[in-house]
Image (cartoon, rainbow, N blue to C red; front, side, top):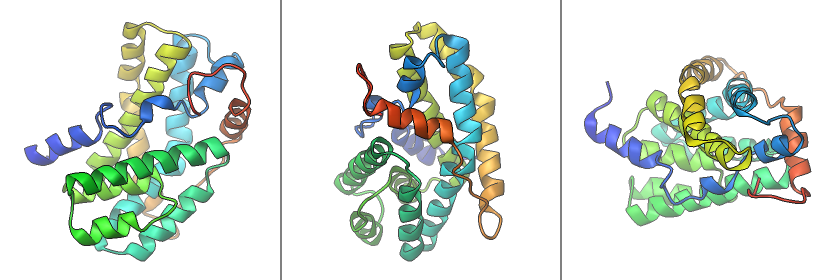
Length: 230
């Protein structure tokens, strides 16, 4: 069971109020709405669920675990390796700019809040480009949050941002959004469990196969009308 101080720190870190700009991105969801792939609550739920268990769980979530373990071990070489690897998997300029902007903002906050020791903050500040999973895992380690709890919060926060984007862009009502989020609880657990399995192999079993997401993200870059930056 997570100790209360760590739980409070995790709630703080995963809060939508954290000033790192997550509210301004949809990660291809807005393009899916524009194409008619997402048009109501049911299709929005399917889109978010499938991206969570078939995209996040196969790449970003296991890489998140590898980054967390590298920070715990003080292995800054491995941190830089997986940060660079993850950045290279961002297929479009929007997705790269998203992870860079949010990663930079969170790293700046880690420094301003003096989370963690000086060595961690110095290593984090020395990474460029810096991806969001790298900064988030550093913050988790700095605050004493273990990998399973931290990843669950990270995945839930991702789903929560997707639901918020769907509410604005489909559009949906607030109650419909909460029903979608409630229905994603099992998917978050499934994502964490699958990520743990993939990160446990040698080499880690990672897959970046998500052609529809890449195509929609590229389409979004020239979409005529947009609410979101990705």
